[in-house]
Image (cartoon, rainbow, N blue to C red):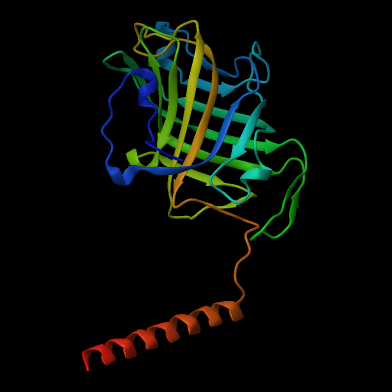
Length: 264
């Protein structure tokens, strides 16, 4: 599944992204019910001295950060059949510095400067098995996916209740991912993109140039280039590599001989 890293379509933006910026989505999650994220900024002048905070809540009305149960999936991977809409605990904590005023672009409010961390933890044992895989059982509490990000954005629609939160390495964000289930290339381009729906009350700017407090329902996707590979994927043994290399060498010799014969 390919996608452009910014969820601009959700807020009516038109973003030109070069073709090289197309990544592969390898993980998704969706809400298991109810609002699960909270943005706090009262919109008063006093807030000029404070950072805005953005976090998950364990229940729709919780007033402190907490983990929330979501549905999590790996896609475009050999382990996708074993990790498909499974129950996971999602925790996210982020802040936006007080000196990062909101930007207005068309019908969207863009709040830059988002930085924080997130994690998805399994709630039950998961066994990975199948062709090309080493049968492995991951205990409940294993790290499905976690990471950090900075230089992200929160975007909301000026006249609606939808938006997005995203951070993309292609667009200058600093992102890292780790997983017990996947091996992620240290040099990979990474992308974290989450949707915001059912925003209430509708987010808007205040006199101090920041998004006011709201709650919302979030889901999203995580992408990389190159695509991560399963940690349990079978790697050819040295003897197998030697046979492959020898086979390629024989093919090369045969092609050169054929070429000389045709020339003669």
